[in-house]
Amino acid sequence: MTIAQNGDRFKMNLNMHSSINLTTPPNAQPIFAPDLTLVGPAVRHTPAGRFQSHLTKLEALADFVTVIGAVMSSYAAYYLLGLGRHIYYPRSVVFGVSATFAAVIVLMLDRVGAYSRGTSLLRVRETERILRVSMEALGFILGASFFTNFLFSRWLLVIAFGLVPLFLFLQKHLVYVLVQHLHAKGYGIERVLIYGSGSTGRRVYSVLRRSPKLGLEPVALVDDNPAKVGCAIFELGYENRRSASVMCGPLTRDLVAESAADLVVIAIPSMQHEKFHHAVGEAMAAGARVSFVPSHFVHSDPLVDFQDIDGVLLASFGRDPRRFTYEWAKRIFDFCGAAALLVLGFPLFLLLAILIKLDSKGPALFRQERVGLHGRKFRMFKFRTMYSEAPVYAYSPKESDDLRITRLGRFLRRTSLDELPQLLNVFMGNMSLVGPRPEMPFIVETYTERHCQRLLVKPGITGLWQLSGDRNYLIHENIEYDLYYMKNRNFFMDIAILLHTCIFAMRGI
Image: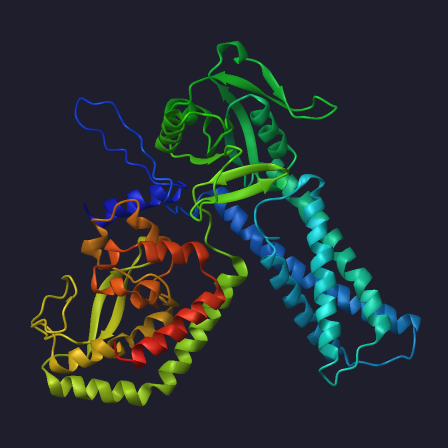
């Protein structure tokens, strides 16, 4: 299998929330066995996926600008009304405080999931988040004033307490209307096929209809009961305004393809295990993602994402690991950290390069092609630790006494100093300080769908696997560490991994 073929398979896997073995033995019926323990993040490059990504960024930017406008309007009102003992603030100070406060608001909104795709009936949850985050942020500003020399007018804070939530509410409403208008024109829409037309299926249909910001348009329902075929299912409510027809089941790949469905929702919580797996396999064979309404007594699985939409619990095989503020903060931290370490460590880099040249023949810097984010290849840099006659592409040595390793190379590998040139890759954006290790192309060519999950996150210099006792084994044979990181990663986990890496390296293990 070539890298290109593996990339095609990987791209197809991006449209799935799980992985499934579609290999069919000769003269045998296809057996579909999706691995529900896999993390299949929804990193999609469809028009609807790009629309949602751009919408999230624009919404965060709109919130940032809105809060700045609200705070500056509060100061204008305070100044014009002449409330209390007037305190004059320079315009630059007001703008600086407004921008800082706006950044805090955006970070807090992202923290509580305001930029996730889910929404709530009548957008009550959205309004609740605005009120709660605004009050908490203003309370934070008030508390911070006690530890600084900057004096805040209480009247100014009172006005801001009212205007910030009001401005955000109005702006969110305008965004909501804009998204509705764009969806009506067909932008950012994903077609949904609901399997099951009973009470659960009808509830799923209703919540999707009443949550237009989701961009999920239910086009039809499928039911195995012939008596229900052709019936019209209306959304729950007093008025029978919108409906969808029931198609004849069972769910097949041809039916999914005929409906041009991007997402299949299995709305039969009591479905038998074998039938459920078969339905998942058929949906994924047609290139559709799958969500399902779990049974009432579902256990908490760290590798399955649950989302509550107006009281209907939908489970999906994994989630999108990209979080707007986290990814931006991570890239800024990577860029600044790599730049600082490259400048400060230049004398050490020069010394090591000279020692490598004196120790054995060949260049001091070793370049090797690796596979990174979304299967893209890049040149990775390391200090050379093996003799120049050693094969460029081969499995890494497991033992320190490997004959391919030079005398100085053993020290560099033991202290991880050979990894330092990868700071250039971090600076250029090919790698991150923390993430799964990038693999060589000939290894990636052997990847299964399960292993391809590693390619959904930017590779890093260090990570959980490097800190584990399993680092003596091949990386792709121990992907549980990477899957755990992908599911739980956050900025503070990255910092913790870097701290442990420093301790790990200083001990020379």
